[in-house]
Image (cartoon, rainbow, N blue to C red; front, side, top):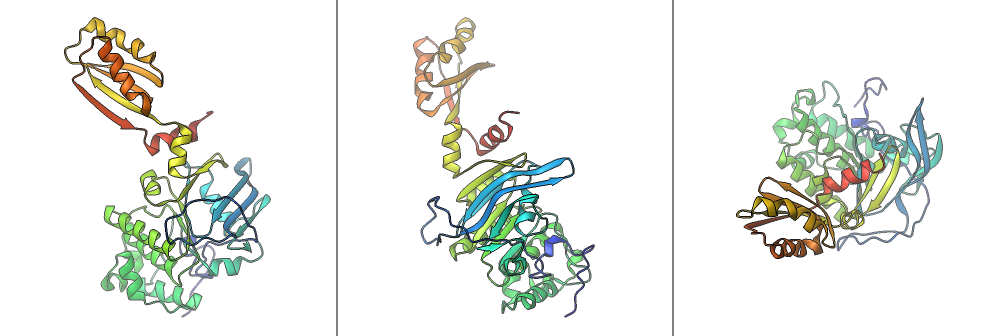
Length: 353
């Protein structure tokens, strides 16, 4: 099958159809010693799946990446988080040699990104952000082209079914697909040939809740068979649900790399209490914030109507309630909550700004 690969029209989405249609890949021989706990059955090796060392990339006066060091171990699901403009897509482009860094080196699967790009892309599946399907090609055409390009023997019907597309939909021209259907097709292309590395840039964009759930199941299944999954997203709940570790990028610099639990611990275990004060006199209510702020482990306390809202460490919640009762307040109801991943993300990405 003949296929045009004009750089003006062939976009990174189907980067796999152009050399695995142009899949994201990169690499270098590097070992790393960081130990992480992966779910039972997940394989790991000493050689990193992704290694970025001192990577800097500038676009004119804008520094997109600044001396970025990043290591992703083989077999893990790694979440790459950051606000818009943080440099996430640029980092992926460097890994896969879509752009060359101004300084530093990139390696993927033990291969140098700058000199062994073809082999990297052969072994990597990509679902890019801002993908585009090829005109006048059906879903089947896309898959058959990808299968032929990598010399695989995948069943197109099985791939369609796995991502939630029917045979009827596969026979339609992909230009007629909704955004969610095109996203599913692009994922199916990325899965061709059981790649060693999956790079998923905002993979749940355009998907309904059922599609997002299927995406998570596929990510976990790919990791269970031994693939590494590099998952870039700003949808924090999706990252929290599937990732072994998370790296947070801010202004082109890696702010932190940790597990979700590790991020919570590093950011503090502050939670919130909402104490209903029905029956408590206005005079006593007005004094309670100062009383509760004096309790060890309490960060803040403010009145909100007939309630007292207390921000505190988990261990201080009972002490805060006791302080209110000891002061003579009537506490008719207590609501408690933990700090969300979104709160943690905001605190890390906005720290120092």
